[in-house]
Length: 115
Image (cartoon, rainbow, N blue to C red; front, side, top):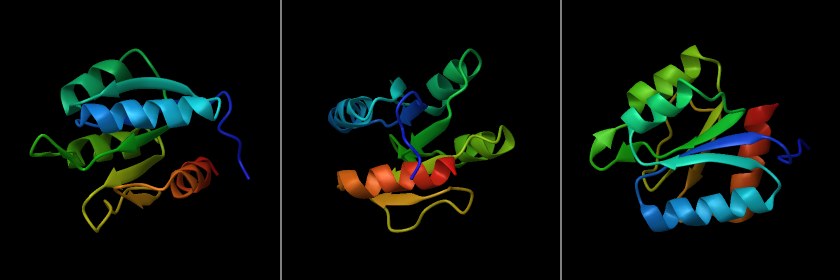
């Protein structure tokens, strides 16, 4: 099992309460949280200065598909886990967790993505 302690995790989520919850849970595992960011533009701006080890990605950001960001993660070889209310993950994703998420499922998906 891969530890998340010390890992840099980017959270891309447009729902503020969920983003804050993800931040609290992930930082509680000892990871450094980047963001959370609510949009593709803000995520790309953050990526210009930071390099996450792994990311969580909501596939629908205020009605906009985050597929271009998934493609950017893949191009930069940044593993990511889709955390979404939709039933299908992006084919480029390294994992999928359905909202509302279970903390154990989220942790396993992030650890698997880091392998």
